[in-house]
Length: 287
Length: 119
Image (cartoon, rainbow over all chains, first blue to last red; front, side):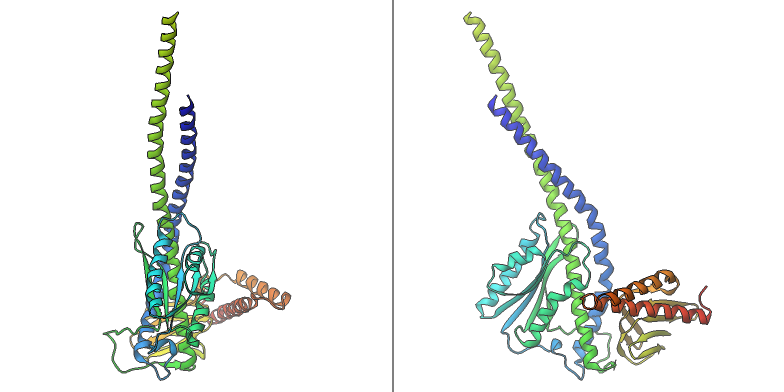
C-alpha cells in the first residue's frame, strides 16, 4: 500500500494549488473590468494631447524646443520600461523584456550606450542584467497609480535627454489589445515625431500665452507624462488579463493532473486489494 | 462661446478665434450655446483653440452645480491646517495646490450666487 499513500498526498497538494490558482483567476477576472475602464477613460485625453503635440512638431514654432528636434548623432538611447510588480502572469514580463533586450543588443553593437528607468519590480529585475545604466525606478504602485507616480522616472530620463546623455527615448510596455492578446510595445517618445494632419492649413502658428518657450515646455512635458501614464494603465490591464489566462490554464492543468493521479491511485488500490485476496486464497489453499 | 480661466485672465472664445495655446488655472469654464449654458469648474490644465474647435485638457473637472460647499470649506480648512502644522514636507506643494483650488471653488460659487445662477 506504499504507492497509494504517496499518490494521495500528491493529489491533495495539487488540489490546494488548484484552489490558489482558481482564486487568483477569479480575482484577476474581477479586476480586469475596473482596470480596463480606467484605461479607456484616459485614452481620449492622450489622443487629443497627442494631436496637438503633433501639430506643434509640424509647426516648428519660433522657438524650437529640444524635444521636437531630431538629433544628427546617436550616442545614447534611453528606455523607460513598464513592467508589473508581481509575477504569475504568464509570459507578459518576459516577452516585454526580451523585446527590449533585442533592441538593446542591436544598439550595443553599434556602440550606443543605454540608460533606462524602470516602473515595476519585474522590469527592474529583468533589466538589471543588461549592460545599461539604471537612472531611476519606482515599484509597487498598485492597481490605481496616480499620474504623479510616473513623473519621477520620466523626469530623470528627460533630464538625460536635455543634457545629451541620450538622443532618443523609448517607452516600453504591454499594449492591451484584448483579454487574450497583449503585445509588447516600443514607442519613441523623444524626439517627438511630427504628424501631418491633412485637414490643417500649412502656414499657421498659435498665439502663445503667456510666452511660447515656457508654454511649449509645459505642454510637451504634460504630453510625455500622459503617454507614460497611459502606458502604465495599459500594462496594468494587460497584467490582469494575462494573469487571468495564465491562472485559468494552470487550474485546468491541475485538474488534468489530478484526474491522471486519481486513475493511478485507483489502479494501485485495486491492485493491492487483488493481491491481498490472492494471498488470502493462497494461504487458505496451503492450509 | 467658451469662457475659460486662462493663466493671464479669463478668455472668451467666439467662433473663428485665432489659434491659441495657453495654460488654464483653477476656475470656472463656461460653454454657452444658444440653447444652454454648461458651467464647469476645472482645477487647471491646458487649452488649445483652433478656428473651429476648442480643446480643453483639464487636470480634473466638476460641474459647478455639483460642488459641495460644506465639503469644499472643510477641505480648505484641512489644507490650511496642514500648511500651518508642517513647515517642510514634500506634501506642502500638494496642500498649497489644494488650498488654491478650494479657495477658487468657493469664489466661483460666490460669483454664481451673485449672478443668481445658483439655486
